[in-house]
Image 1 (cartoon, helix red, strand yellow):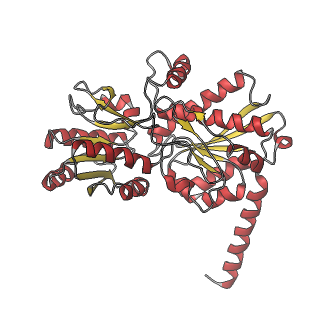
Image 2 (cartoon, one colour):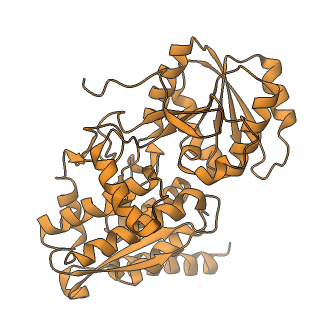
Image 3 (cartoon, helix red, strand yellow):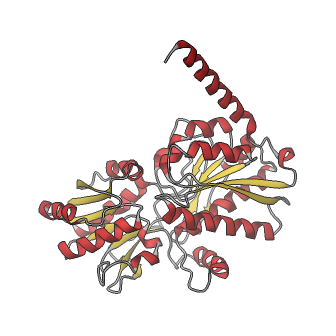
Length: 396
C-alpha cells in the first residue's frame, strides 16, 4: 500500500469510528416516546434453525410488552437486520441498526459474528444481549463492557457432558462436528473443556449427504460414546441415522439444537434417535417455563412446544425492560450500569429455581449449570423426557 492510500485508509477508519460513536441513541430525548430495540436475526444462514424461532419469540414478547403499556410508558419499536451468521456481515448490520436509533441490541445469530464485532460494539456504548449464544468467549475481555449472554456457556455444557460420560463409564469419546468455520470456532471452547475424556475429533462437511466414511472412522477407533456437535439439523439427523446403522449400542449424545426442533425428528429413520441423549434448556417441572409456553401457544397454536430459544429470548426482553425502568433512561452507559444490577432473575429456562445474574465482572447470566437439562429420545424418535442417567443437583 502506498503512503497516500494508507493515509486515506486511516482517515476512513477514523471517520467511521467517529460516526459510530455519535450515531447511537443518547437517551430519552432522541427517541421521544419510543424505545428502539435492534434485532440481528439470522433468518437465512446456517444459524437460522435457532435464530428464526428466537427472533419470533423476541418480537412476540415485545408485542406483549407494548400491549401492557410498553417500557416505562414508552412503546417499543423494533428495527431488524439479517447477517446470515456471516462474521463479515455482522458489523455492517449492527452499524445500520445503530444508525436507526437502536437503544439496545439483541443478537440472534452466531457467536462468530459477535466476536468479529466486539470492538465496534464497545465504541457504540449500546448494551447488547445474546439470548441464545453459548460461546463464553463473547463476553470475555477485552471489549466486553456492553455484551451480555443468557444462554449457558459451553464450559457448562462440558460439565454436564462429563458427568454424563462418567455415569456411563465412558473414557474414550468420538466428537463428530460439521466443518463449517462458525461451528469449528464455536466448538473450540467445548473441546478444550472436555478434558475429562480422551476426545477424538472427526470433521464432516456441513452439506454432506453421506457420512458413512466419517462414521466408519469413528467405528474403527472403538469409542465408548459419540457426541455429534453441530448447529445444523440436517447434519445432525444424517449423523444419527448413520451412527444408528453402524454403531448400534454405542451411547450417542448431541448438542442443544436437535432437542429444540421436533420438525427435524421426522427426518430421522425409524428408531434412529432411540436412546440418543441431548442437551435441552427446558423442563415442564419449571412453572415459569409452563407459563411462558402458554403465552406463546396463544399465538403459535395448541401444538406449540416451547424450548430454550423461546424462553431465553423472552427473558432477554424482560431483563432489558426491567433495566430500563429501574434506570429511567435508555442512555447506553446508564442502562448498562442498570443491567449489571440485575441479580437473581428467575429464569424461564432450566430446572425450577434457575436464575440469571449480571455484574461488572459477570456478563454470563447463568447462575450455575441448572439451566441445562439432558433429555432422551424414545423408539418413536420423540423426546420422552429427562434422561435418567444424570441430573444436576439444583438444590445444592
